[in-house]
Amino acid sequence: MKRSMAKCSAVILTSCAVACAFTSTSPPLQQLNPPNHVEESSRLSFGDDNLKTSRGIRSPHRRMKFSGCNSPIENIPACPSTDEDDSIDSRREALFALAGATWATLNPLPASALYGSDAKMELPDVMDSLSARATGRQCLVESLGNRECLAYLDPEAKLYKKPDATILIGRILSSSEALSGVPTLVGAKKWSQVLGVTTGPMGTLTLTMNALVKDLATDEDRNSKREDLAKLVKGDIIAIGQGAERKNGDDVLKACDAATDHLAKFIQLL
Image (cartoon, rainbow, N blue to C red; front, side, top):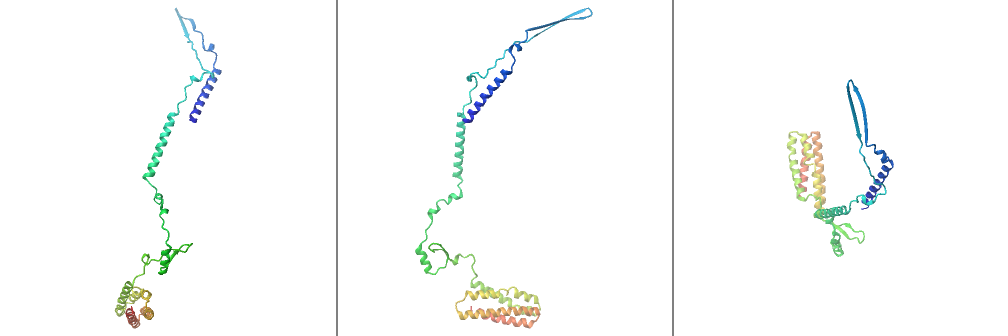
Protein backbone atom coordinates (compact mmCIF):
# COMPACT_ATOMS: atom_id res chain seq x y z
CA MET A 1 0.00 0.00 0.00
CA LYS A 2 2.78 2.44 0.90
CA ARG A 3 4.64 1.65 -2.30
CA SER A 4 1.51 2.41 -4.44
CA MET A 5 0.91 5.78 -2.69
CA ALA A 6 4.54 6.72 -3.28
CA LYS A 7 4.19 5.96 -7.00
CA CYS A 8 1.05 8.16 -7.26
CA SER A 9 2.79 11.09 -5.57
CA ALA A 10 5.72 10.80 -7.97
CA VAL A 11 3.36 10.85 -11.00
CA ILE A 12 1.58 14.02 -9.75
CA LEU A 13 4.82 15.91 -9.13
CA THR A 14 6.22 14.93 -12.53
CA SER A 15 3.07 16.13 -14.38
CA CYS A 16 3.14 19.51 -12.65
CA ALA A 17 6.83 20.05 -13.39
CA VAL A 18 6.41 19.29 -17.11
CA ALA A 19 3.40 21.62 -17.44
CA CYS A 20 5.18 24.53 -15.75
CA ALA A 21 8.27 24.13 -17.88
CA PHE A 22 6.28 24.09 -21.13
CA THR A 23 4.26 27.21 -20.16
CA SER A 24 7.36 29.23 -19.29
CA THR A 25 9.20 28.42 -22.52
CA SER A 26 6.28 28.63 -25.05
CA PRO A 27 5.99 31.83 -27.21
CA PRO A 28 2.91 34.12 -27.13
CA LEU A 29 -0.16 33.07 -29.02
CA GLN A 30 0.11 36.07 -31.33
CA GLN A 31 3.39 34.85 -32.70
CA LEU A 32 1.85 31.48 -33.42
CA ASN A 33 -0.91 33.03 -35.64
CA PRO A 34 0.52 34.30 -38.95
CA PRO A 35 -1.65 36.35 -41.42
CA ASN A 36 -4.52 34.55 -42.98
CA HIS A 37 -3.59 35.22 -46.67
CA VAL A 38 -0.33 35.85 -48.33
CA GLU A 39 -0.65 36.74 -51.99
CA GLU A 40 2.18 36.99 -54.32
CA SER A 41 1.86 37.92 -58.00
CA SER A 42 4.46 38.21 -60.57
CA ARG A 43 4.47 38.76 -64.27
CA LEU A 44 6.74 36.74 -66.39
CA SER A 45 7.26 37.55 -70.07
CA PHE A 46 8.25 34.84 -72.40
CA GLY A 47 8.16 36.42 -75.83
CA ASP A 48 4.52 37.27 -76.72
CA ASP A 49 2.93 35.19 -73.93
CA ASN A 50 2.14 36.76 -70.61
CA LEU A 51 1.79 34.42 -67.65
CA LYS A 52 0.42 35.56 -64.36
CA THR A 53 0.84 33.36 -61.41
CA SER A 54 -0.52 33.83 -58.01
CA ARG A 55 0.11 31.78 -54.91
CA GLY A 56 -1.81 31.98 -51.75
CA ILE A 57 -0.68 30.43 -48.53
CA ARG A 58 -3.13 30.03 -45.66
CA SER A 59 -1.98 29.20 -42.21
CA PRO A 60 -4.79 27.87 -40.07
CA HIS A 61 -5.37 29.44 -36.73
CA ARG A 62 -4.47 27.03 -33.98
CA ARG A 63 -5.05 27.46 -30.31
CA MET A 64 -3.18 25.44 -27.77
CA LYS A 65 -4.26 25.21 -24.15
CA PHE A 66 -2.16 23.84 -21.33
CA SER A 67 -3.11 23.33 -17.76
CA GLY A 68 -0.65 24.85 -15.31
CA CYS A 69 0.47 23.67 -11.95
CA ASN A 70 -2.65 25.17 -10.41
CA SER A 71 -4.95 22.78 -12.33
CA PRO A 72 -7.45 20.90 -10.14
CA ILE A 73 -6.41 17.51 -8.87
CA GLU A 74 -9.70 16.02 -10.07
CA ASN A 75 -8.48 16.19 -13.70
CA ILE A 76 -5.57 13.84 -12.87
CA PRO A 77 -6.50 10.16 -13.19
CA ALA A 78 -6.93 8.39 -9.90
CA CYS A 79 -4.30 5.97 -8.61
CA PRO A 80 -5.01 2.28 -9.15
CA SER A 81 -6.60 0.48 -6.26
CA THR A 82 -4.42 -1.87 -4.18
CA ASP A 83 -7.25 -4.07 -2.99
CA GLU A 84 -6.74 -6.44 -5.91
CA ASP A 85 -2.98 -6.69 -5.22
CA ASP A 86 -3.62 -7.41 -1.56
CA SER A 87 -6.05 -10.19 -2.42
CA ILE A 88 -3.52 -11.75 -4.83
CA ASP A 89 -0.78 -11.63 -2.18
CA SER A 90 -3.08 -13.20 0.39
CA ARG A 91 -4.01 -16.04 -1.94
CA ARG A 92 -0.34 -16.59 -2.85
CA GLU A 93 0.68 -16.78 0.82
CA ALA A 94 -2.15 -19.20 1.55
CA LEU A 95 -1.08 -21.39 -1.37
CA PHE A 96 2.55 -21.48 -0.16
CA ALA A 97 1.44 -22.33 3.39
CA LEU A 98 -0.76 -25.16 2.11
CA ALA A 99 2.09 -26.52 -0.04
CA GLY A 100 4.50 -26.48 2.92
CA ALA A 101 2.04 -28.25 5.20
CA THR A 102 1.39 -30.89 2.54
CA TRP A 103 5.11 -31.50 2.03
CA ALA A 104 5.75 -31.82 5.77
CA THR A 105 2.88 -34.31 6.10
CA LEU A 106 3.77 -36.51 3.14
CA ASN A 107 7.57 -36.44 3.64
CA PRO A 108 8.37 -36.69 7.39
CA LEU A 109 11.97 -36.23 8.44
CA PRO A 110 13.88 -39.19 9.90
CA ALA A 111 14.47 -37.21 13.09
CA SER A 112 10.72 -37.05 13.68
CA ALA A 113 10.63 -40.81 14.08
CA LEU A 114 12.81 -40.57 17.21
CA TYR A 115 10.58 -37.92 18.79
CA GLY A 116 9.39 -39.17 22.13
CA SER A 117 11.91 -41.96 22.44
CA ASP A 118 13.24 -40.44 25.67
CA ALA A 119 9.93 -41.16 27.33
CA LYS A 120 10.37 -44.86 26.56
CA MET A 121 13.79 -45.20 28.20
CA GLU A 122 14.08 -48.11 30.58
CA LEU A 123 15.61 -47.31 33.94
CA PRO A 124 18.30 -49.72 35.16
CA ASP A 125 17.32 -52.35 37.68
CA VAL A 126 19.60 -52.24 40.71
CA MET A 127 18.56 -55.64 42.05
CA ASP A 128 19.19 -57.29 38.70
CA SER A 129 22.67 -55.77 38.63
CA LEU A 130 23.50 -57.07 42.09
CA SER A 131 22.29 -60.57 41.27
CA ALA A 132 24.26 -60.61 38.03
CA ARG A 133 27.45 -59.66 39.85
CA ALA A 134 26.79 -62.36 42.41
CA THR A 135 26.62 -65.03 39.70
CA GLY A 136 30.08 -64.07 38.45
CA ARG A 137 29.19 -62.40 35.15
CA GLN A 138 31.98 -60.20 33.84
CA CYS A 139 31.06 -56.52 33.58
CA LEU A 140 32.44 -54.60 30.61
CA VAL A 141 31.02 -51.07 31.12
CA GLU A 142 30.09 -49.40 34.41
CA SER A 143 28.30 -46.11 35.06
CA LEU A 144 30.23 -43.30 36.73
CA GLY A 145 27.70 -42.55 39.46
CA ASN A 146 26.61 -45.73 41.20
CA ARG A 147 28.97 -48.01 39.25
CA GLU A 148 26.08 -49.93 37.84
CA CYS A 149 27.00 -52.39 35.10
CA LEU A 150 25.74 -51.28 31.72
CA ALA A 151 27.06 -54.17 29.61
CA TYR A 152 28.03 -57.72 30.51
CA LEU A 153 30.29 -60.11 28.66
CA ASP A 154 28.27 -62.42 26.43
CA PRO A 155 30.31 -65.27 24.94
CA GLU A 156 27.61 -66.01 22.37
CA ALA A 157 27.69 -62.44 20.99
CA LYS A 158 31.41 -62.35 20.21
CA LEU A 159 32.41 -61.25 16.73
CA TYR A 160 35.35 -63.65 16.70
CA LYS A 161 35.22 -67.06 18.26
CA LYS A 162 38.23 -69.30 18.53
CA PRO A 163 38.01 -72.64 16.74
CA ASP A 164 36.65 -75.45 18.82
CA ALA A 165 38.50 -78.67 19.68
CA THR A 166 37.10 -80.63 16.74
CA ILE A 167 38.52 -78.17 14.21
CA LEU A 168 41.93 -78.21 15.93
CA ILE A 169 42.04 -82.00 16.01
CA GLY A 170 41.19 -82.08 12.29
CA ARG A 171 44.16 -79.80 11.58
CA ILE A 172 46.47 -82.15 13.54
CA LEU A 173 45.26 -85.15 11.54
CA SER A 174 45.90 -83.36 8.22
CA SER A 175 49.43 -82.50 9.41
CA SER A 176 50.10 -86.13 10.37
CA GLU A 177 49.03 -87.27 6.88
CA ALA A 178 51.47 -84.82 5.30
CA LEU A 179 54.18 -86.07 7.67
CA SER A 180 53.62 -89.67 6.57
CA GLY A 181 54.50 -88.74 2.97
CA VAL A 182 57.93 -87.33 3.82
CA PRO A 183 59.83 -90.71 3.52
CA THR A 184 58.57 -91.11 -0.05
CA LEU A 185 59.88 -87.65 -0.95
CA VAL A 186 63.23 -88.44 0.69
CA GLY A 187 63.57 -91.64 -1.36
CA ALA A 188 62.97 -89.59 -4.54
CA LYS A 189 65.41 -86.93 -3.27
CA LYS A 190 62.84 -84.16 -3.67
CA TRP A 191 64.31 -81.91 -1.02
CA SER A 192 62.42 -78.81 -2.06
CA GLN A 193 59.11 -80.62 -1.60
CA VAL A 194 60.23 -81.81 1.83
CA LEU A 195 60.87 -78.20 2.81
CA GLY A 196 57.45 -77.32 1.43
CA VAL A 197 55.80 -79.87 3.73
CA THR A 198 57.52 -78.42 6.80
CA THR A 199 56.47 -74.86 5.95
CA GLY A 200 53.05 -75.66 4.45
CA PRO A 201 50.81 -78.30 6.04
CA MET A 202 53.03 -78.63 9.12
CA GLY A 203 53.81 -74.93 9.44
CA THR A 204 50.91 -74.27 11.84
CA LEU A 205 51.10 -77.63 13.65
CA THR A 206 52.79 -76.17 16.73
CA LEU A 207 50.23 -73.34 17.00
CA THR A 208 47.38 -75.84 16.74
CA MET A 209 48.84 -78.03 19.49
CA ASN A 210 49.32 -75.02 21.80
CA ALA A 211 45.71 -73.92 21.19
CA LEU A 212 44.50 -77.37 22.19
CA VAL A 213 46.63 -77.25 25.34
CA LYS A 214 44.98 -73.98 26.42
CA ASP A 215 41.49 -75.16 25.49
CA LEU A 216 41.76 -78.48 27.34
CA ALA A 217 43.50 -77.18 30.46
CA THR A 218 41.46 -79.23 32.93
CA ASP A 219 44.05 -81.61 34.38
CA GLU A 220 47.39 -80.02 35.27
CA ASP A 221 49.37 -83.28 34.97
CA ARG A 222 48.00 -84.13 31.55
CA ASN A 223 48.28 -80.53 30.44
CA SER A 224 51.99 -80.37 31.31
CA LYS A 225 52.62 -83.55 29.30
CA ARG A 226 50.80 -82.01 26.32
CA GLU A 227 52.99 -78.93 26.53
CA ASP A 228 56.17 -81.06 26.57
CA LEU A 229 55.03 -83.10 23.56
CA ALA A 230 54.17 -79.91 21.63
CA LYS A 231 57.70 -78.62 22.20
CA LEU A 232 59.20 -81.95 21.06
CA VAL A 233 57.13 -81.92 17.85
CA LYS A 234 58.31 -78.39 17.14
CA GLY A 235 61.94 -79.51 17.48
CA ASP A 236 61.32 -82.50 15.18
CA ILE A 237 59.88 -80.27 12.43
CA ILE A 238 62.92 -78.00 12.64
CA ALA A 239 65.23 -81.05 12.37
CA ILE A 240 63.38 -82.24 9.24
CA GLY A 241 63.90 -78.88 7.57
CA GLN A 242 67.59 -78.74 8.46
CA GLY A 243 68.18 -82.28 7.13
CA ALA A 244 66.43 -81.38 3.85
CA GLU A 245 68.64 -78.30 3.44
CA ARG A 246 71.74 -80.50 3.93
CA LYS A 247 70.17 -83.14 1.65
CA ASN A 248 70.81 -85.76 4.33
CA GLY A 249 68.12 -88.42 4.05
CA ASP A 250 69.05 -90.27 7.27
CA ASP A 251 68.60 -87.18 9.43
CA VAL A 252 65.30 -86.37 7.76
CA LEU A 253 63.93 -89.89 8.28
CA LYS A 254 65.10 -89.97 11.91
CA ALA A 255 63.40 -86.65 12.68
CA CYS A 256 60.28 -87.74 10.79
CA ASP A 257 59.94 -90.92 12.91
CA ALA A 258 60.40 -88.93 16.13
CA ALA A 259 57.76 -86.38 15.08
CA THR A 260 55.28 -89.16 14.24
CA ASP A 261 55.84 -90.82 17.62
CA HIS A 262 55.46 -87.60 19.62
CA LEU A 263 52.37 -86.54 17.67
CA ALA A 264 50.68 -89.89 18.33
CA LYS A 265 51.31 -89.56 22.08
CA PHE A 266 49.88 -86.06 22.03
CA ILE A 267 46.67 -87.25 20.40
CA GLN A 268 46.33 -89.99 23.02
CA LEU A 269 46.38 -87.40 25.80
CA LEU A 270 43.46 -85.43 24.37
